Amino acid sequence: MTAFEVDTGSLLPAALSLTSVVALVTLWIVVRRPALAMIFFFVLFAFAWRLVSVLYIDVFGPIFSDQLALEIGPGISALPMAASQGIVVVALLFSFRQQRLLRLVDPNEAMSASRMQSGRFSLPDLAFLAAALFVGALGLELLVSGPIPLFAGIERFDYTRLYGGPVHRRLLEWGPMLALQLGIFFAVPLLHDRPADRRFLALLAVLILYLLLAGHRFSSLYVYSAFFVLPIGAVLIGGQAKSPSRADRDCGKVLRYLTATGLVLLVLIGIAVTYSYVVVRGEGGEFLSKLSQRILVQQGEMWWMTYKRVFLFNEWSSTHAAYRLFVDPFDPTRNSTMQFLMEQALPLTRAHFIISHGSAYAGGWPEAFFEIGGPIGGFVLVALSAIMFSEFMFLMTRCIVQERFATCFFLTPILFALSIMVVSGMVNSFIQVTFLVKVVAAMVVFVAEGRWRSSVFSRPPSPIPSHAKSNG
Image (cartoon, rainbow, N blue to C red; front, top):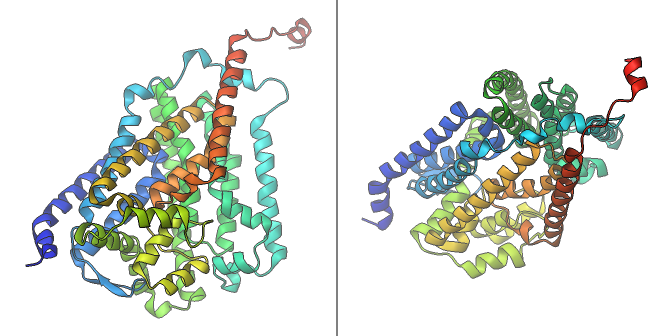
């Protein structure tokens, strides 16, 4: 009996048990702490999908992978995957422990909204105007730049490469971060017993419609929606710190709206995916087979290859992995983790051909950490990244609750980089000079905005002029 067969027979029950524990804890977060689930929806959904895929490969393997052109599974690859995800879940629960959340709101700043809305200056109005102009420019560019991908049967990558204009390309770079800002201005009024600003929800709906017309399917709609609901969760947590009873009422109302919106979005995603496979790609006869590969195999296949190299055959090299990730990736402007993993799993020419055409396979986390640290050091790197990510998310939540709009704006690119790291393992963005500049800028703005707020809130409100009283 081989070592692989011993591992499969003796540790598969342990893998199933640990997977069940992680799944139950995640479900508990969704049911008992829905606001926290909103903040981490982007990560938790990706975790659940990958874990289901990895478990499917372990239990029902060997399974043929269309993308890798080989059979993968069975095994116990779910064991280290579930353990890695469990580390992240524990870190976020520790960072967002109840005692700490109660200190998010400063009673001395309860009147911050009235202090910051004086005069004719309205930050939400300016934000809405800027976002509406950008969305309008997107629509105009789509109409004049060429064929509409949804009606012409063009893949989104081909449209971007052949027809996409500068506004469209900016959306691909900054779209999720724009969705986060829309979510902030949508949800912040809830902190002051006012209705959510539905203008920003309408802008998100228009963006979703644009993405569908531009040939996008599940991934883009999921990412935009996840970043939009993140600030909603933060605001609900802030409301719980102010008034638990009112916050529970608001949370229930928001959950009902989000559930209805999510069902509509699921229908749109289903239509878009079916249209893509049947009409755009002409794979109607193999639709179910392709969909099975997309849902149950492709999310876990790259982790299976890393698991086999690192845990089964001990074929890993920290030096080589670090060199390909940070020093000499095939395309330095994109996620070097997936490029490295594809080079390891596929013939080099085929991997480079796929990457050069703007495509990439799914996965990357926690593969990158185990390719660098091996079967033991990988867990250490996972733990360090989990702590960094969860603490940053707490900082972001604090800034949203305290309405530090300028700081939130400058923290958004850092949030996006950290989120992509946890979901897809992208680590090469952290060594870029531009990322360092973003971190320094965010720190400067955080300090400056804190001092400005202190000066504003330490001054008594300006007295109302006597003629204004008489006119009132």
